[in-house]
Image (tube, rainbow, N blue to C red; front, side):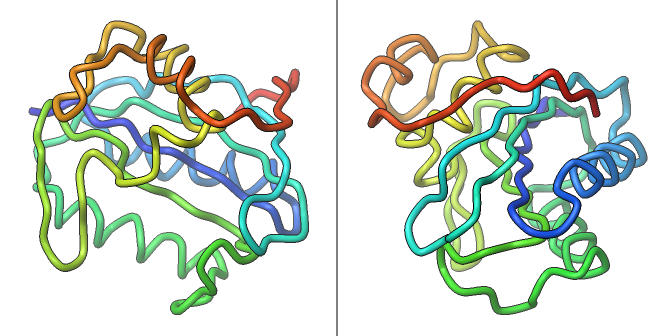
Length: 162
């Protein structure tokens, strides 16, 4: 069984409802109780126009990274996400595998740790709440060090629960 961090975000429609639905889905995937970070509101990134709600969850799974990715993408599409979204465009639901145990993995469809996570405070701050002791296996940096080095952005914790 592996501990996995999944980043969850939404910037279209009822964003909090989408995140809550994703939480129920992650509950069904996890072999143990899901640890949930706070929900954070962040400025849009890249070409996105609307503010995001972001969070992270820690699950445990016996699935392979590719099996898990397939299940996440299927759930995103069932939730109304475009199958071929614009990079950094608006999205009703986005779930990314940030870490999978301490594996470093890369193929044509998946890179672990996620290639951009260390540049995104909206991933790092929620992740720190539920995975504080983790050290990135590529950079050999703690979450505190990654947070210190990440580009600044407008971000605030909400009181929302999921």
